[in-house]
Length: 404
Image 1: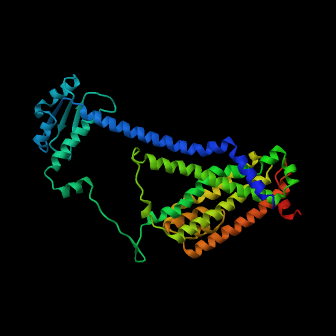
Image 2: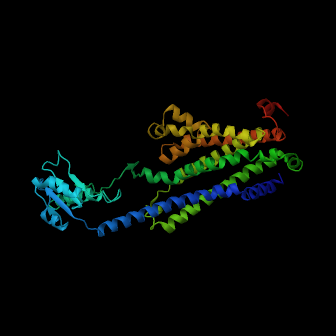
Image 3: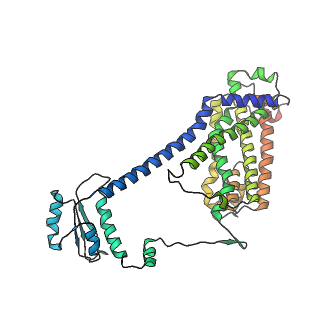
């Protein structure tokens, strides 16, 4: 194993020299930058349009048979007050371009709609007439209403919601954030870094240089070095994605009108955070070893890719049962998905974030994942030992377990 550091250094340097690694790493910050840019431009365009609309003036006529409009409101808009019998002639004035808008408030607003007629000023500004009609009515009605009733009508009444668990204040959303980070990190690394794990052991085979490598380095040293280097590269790529997004949020928070997060208010549960980290580490080791083993068993990266879909189905398939993880954590199917190693990462991390994963079940699930990861890596080393020099066929299971 004295060449382990050499293997790790070589694999990391080789990956960092690849354009695909940096394209994948940079594409996400660029995507976030593009999204933030679109949000910024959209907000700016909306604000500019609102300011422009405020500066515009247009002729308007109003007929109020509902008697709900306040005279001072009509006067504030400089609108003409039209009698009901002149309704059609006023509509004709709008048609002929002599009047910009006409609003007719019927007697029974609960049974009849407000009728709005306006001159075309473009698809984005034609809605101003209807907005004014509703605003005038709403403002007029609310002037005679107490502030408390007004808040109730507008749905702006504030409230506090205090939930208790075991005699302590409990906020399930906030408490799920820190443990849930490991689930998001695992999803990202497997989804976008999995293909590199799968093909990492096929490159030397396809290039026909594996014979020379194995003359100086043992198969076990090589495969362990590859697994460790993949873990390090995954951490590097994760940082390259997260840090630009975090920096962009801190710098452009106000310009983009992004929601604020008070991290100091997040509950810190060392037990749940520790469980989340252990499940994440064991799961990542398991699937790294599994993907590397598959890559070692097949002769080409193309054939290795055909197995990737199966792994992803097993791994992310439990997401279809997400409602069961929340509402029925004690059912047999949830227990099975939480303890079967090829499906357990998502259920364990999700249930841990939600808070319905017991300590005993968490310890059992982590133990199964760790044992499975060790077994898979041992099998992967054995597969690589016998399959490294196979260029034209897949290695059979009988050869892996029987061959000496």
